[in-house]
Each structure stands twice: as structure tokens, then as C-alpha cells.
Length: 170
Image (cartoon, rainbow, N blue to C red; front, side, top):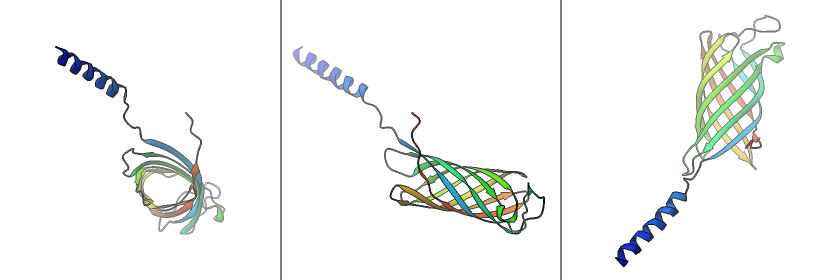
């Protein structure tokens, strides 16, 4: 009987300890920063909001990028959701806005890949992007190549910029 009581007490103590234990939670980080780059339009010509004139086959891009990254507690690749707003063609007196929403992954080495919708004046399209983020003293410096396919054609954009961690809103 004494043996049974000791085992029961030990079992209750062990269960109480494991019941209070929580699973490790992944770490979440938000980052944001400016983007600039260049887009090769090929035969694609997006609508020009300001003048209606045709654009040349290459245009500049300026914009803002934000991302939410989830770091699994066991290591592994980082899961990333990214939003990028761009204004293109300003050097041509044009205004060509676009918004891209990507879901992707980033390896510990900084290589990243994502895909998702791109919204522009002429409709929705599919964006596929890849590149590498370099860490410079806590500042992320991404260099990415994106290809957007739409009914009007294919456009390829090279973007770079920087991103810093934004304050948590908890």
C-alpha cells in the first residue's frame, strides 16, 4: 500500500509539472523599409496614369516594403509574408502603381523565394520572386528579382533596399 501511494504521489507531481509546461512558441518579427529598382517591360506596356503616353521598355521603381517573418522554434526556414507597394515610371513623367503580396520562405543563408498576387491598373497577375537578404548590423538588405506574368505580358523587376525591425504592437 505504501508503495502504491508513493507511485501515485509521484505520478500526480509529474503530471502537474507537465500540465503547466507550454510548447515553445515561434518568434515573430515585423520589418519595413524602402525599395528601389528597375523593371524591364519587354512588350508589356502598363497604363500611364498621368499622360497616357507609351512607356519605354525600362522604368524605375520606388516604393515601400513590409514583412512579417515567423521563426520556428526548432530552427528551419523562416516563413515570410511580404507586401510591397511600388510607383513606377516617374523618370518618364508617368505614374504606374502596383501592389504585390507574397508568401514565401527564407533560408538561414538569406536566400528567399515567394509567390503571390500582383495588382496593377490593368488587373491582377501572378508574381514570383527570389533573391537574397544580407544582414548588416541588424539591418536587412534584400536584393530580389521578381517576374510578374499577366495578360498584357511578362515584366521583370530587380529591387533592392533595406528593412529594419518595426516595434511590436502587442
